[in-house]
Length: 183
Image (cartoon, rainbow, N blue to C red):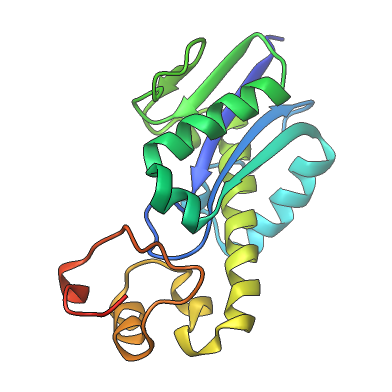
């Protein structure tokens, strides 16, 4: 069996919270793996535990302040390099269509729904991202992060208009709806 490290991310697009990337090398097949967005939260949690027990994995996080300072592309590049340095294997496959200038990396659009190792990485990244944002929701209950996970929903935009930005918001992410909001 070829040694493959699947890599995926969660939290590239939200207005708040960390970018989370995961790399995963599975030790055995796990039934039910798929793109994390196509699996219920309950099933993701069950699969997450199975993946953690049956793989080598590495998680990279970039804080909102890092994303604002460096840009999302540079954070993704740093994450890819860190994962590849941490998990040694023959092949690395990243979900998407760009390597962000990182050598020795293959890409595949929708790999998170086609390749088990990328599906597993997708699940690790998504569960980690969602658990982290739920912890932040306890610190900042007025933003209702538990409902939108930091994404730019109508509710989230309204909460930013009402309360302004908090520590976990990405201030470099601009929305027309927030153009008049003070930082």
